[in-house]
Image 1: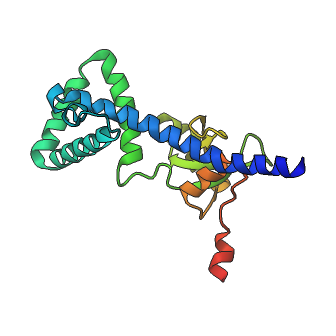
Image 2 (image 1 turned 180 degrees about the vertical axis):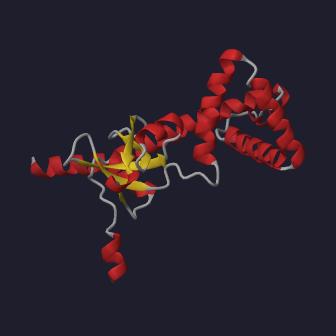
Image 3 (image 1 turned 90 degrees about the vertical axis):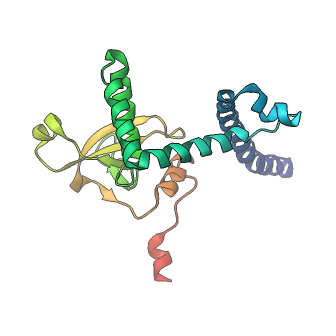
Length: 206
């Protein structure tokens, strides 16, 4: 029975990551293929080829992103984006949703943003208990005036699903900045500590 159990768990270790990865990729491709609906029906790849090939929506999405990015990078494009923002901000309900989403996207995707680029160790949820977290910025406005001391905004992800977590403000002196990459930190969190990040100190000493 011992060899059978060993083979069973070995098979799970081989198949489960691949199966989950394929499922996630299939879902992403399926969602992006919905962008093909913006094309005239006569231009749909399924109609032109006579059979379905998944993934054309991914290519169309990339083309749209590149075209929009190129257009918004010049003077006329920036003015058009600013005009669109001004119009959206005049719509009562939409402006609150749009402003929140835009602030998050600007923080995450802007070249000068620092969100989720630094992994740190913080004591959470109580002193003496440590976890890996990510610096998302610094407190501002009334919150910063109240805290007075030097604080940083930190996102503490849950495991094994890091998309849920807690937003806390911690003294910068209480954060231990790590040299590991964000990807390595996320793997460490998702695996619940099973996949340990490489020891950078030992590697540099070799």
